[in-house]
Length: 123
Image (cartoon, rainbow, N blue to C red; front, side):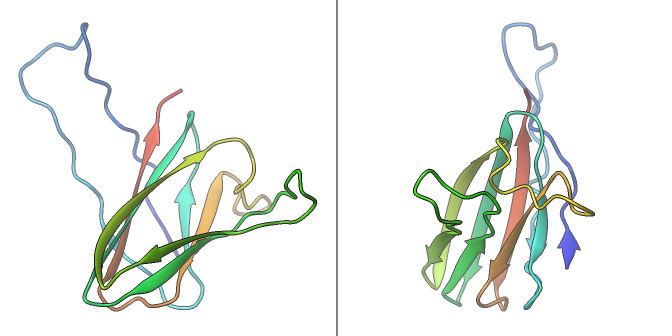
């Protein structure tokens, strides 16, 4: 299981100085079977998933019972050549707790040609 780096988006606005901006996307290869830990902090995290030749399902592990009374994981269905983003609010639903407190867990059904990246939205 890999743990992605805790990287926050850099705000650019009226008080930003300088003429250059941008930061590395931070892509990492998805880990087979055990999944990967995605950092949660600030207002939330933008999880990006990319496939290059292999379709897969990426399942984000929910740990909180919903208002309907069930713990419902979130599934992102990816085509063979696809890129999708999911905003994960930092509201506790996906926080794994214990030794993985502050992280969400994502498990991809295939890992060949599958990459993930995450950026924190500052609070």
